Length: 48
Image 1 (cartoon, one colour):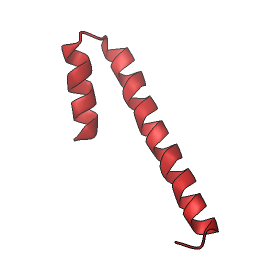
Image 2: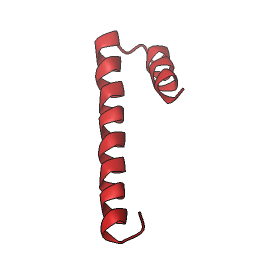
Image 3: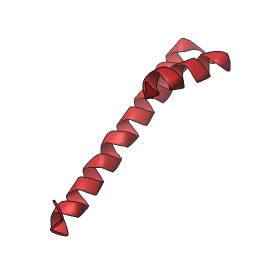
Image 4: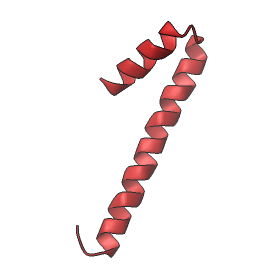
């Protein structure tokens, strides 16, 4: 649902399809990195 929202919003702005894919990929990559860092921090703090 989030990916579709991003793509729909970018399409409304008239951004080219390859750029949309790059932005969507960047958002997904950032999400994975943030999740990984948070899990690692929780594990070292003994909360996981």
